[in-house]
Image (cartoon, rainbow, N blue to C red; front, side, top):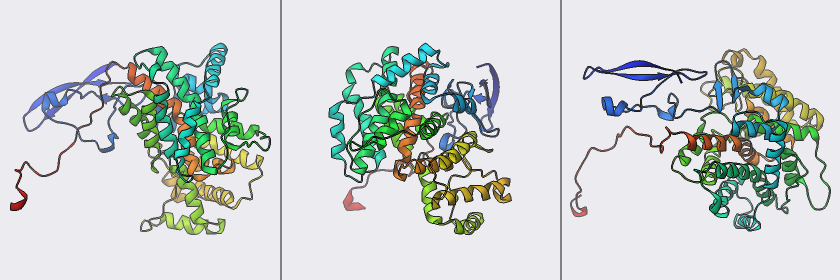
Length: 431
């Protein structure tokens, strides 16, 4: 990063200090204020860290105004159209697209690590049949450190590489086991001959009683969804992974922390909220009524899956997945499903309605991903698990980058204390 300087002045004391102004490849410059308290005796106040760069990163760039998303410099549109999830995973982890030999070796390494220890399967027996699948995923991912503790050395590049491969490989197996536990069916072992996404579909939906035929359109749609969710800069769950990892904890624990963060309805639960909204609307004939409710500032109803905190233009991921969404509905013959018909009518109105167009409240990736997951037969409460599967390579790439960053320190945000002033203890008899 090239450095210029900016002068900050404390008006109360008249003291001025120069701070480095750092420039990245893209995006706004940042003021390096790590010595601010030492220099001027002040902290900064930034709830949610929305104006604070917590790290330097080479992995992902977002321009919300332009609707741009880059993985290692590559536009998401190109990767979603031409790449595969495992190739994108390699890119995020290593910084460059792989050669054919590198991709084959990486894919083989992921494939041979998809099995989980048989003892780990017993963990699921401790969960009630109606436990939320994110509770199971979070707990079981964290437990991986109990099975591989002898091989975890975060300061060893080879150990980090192996941990990354294991996490990416085993997440679908663990997720599918949580799904089978949820629906009361026997677990399905991974098959090495299948692709990453086909293997996931097979573990989710195959049964011992009959052969499961994988629809190539569904396989591609799922792979594309995983690509679109693979990383998204310093969002809440990624920041959680980095913050947990900054303590030196193992990557399995850090990723489990990311799962817990992703579970929140404001983050990974957004596509689940889309389906709940569709259930509330109930029928295509009621769409106009709910559009009016969404426009009414005094009505608490909100259209879920429209607009985005970062993207002030169209979500570039939504542009891609919209086409795939329509393809999969046509392929699976689900155009007459009432909820999906409702969703398509809602999309059509929102794209044409002046109220939404002026405010740039376009359908986002959560809107379409929820519809696709429903079309694939994945229940609402499992949507966030699918999100976690896609986000795993981003989490582990960000964790690895954090470990290698010499400037990185243990995370320790500060606060503005607004509690009681110092006071003396009073014995209970005198209160």
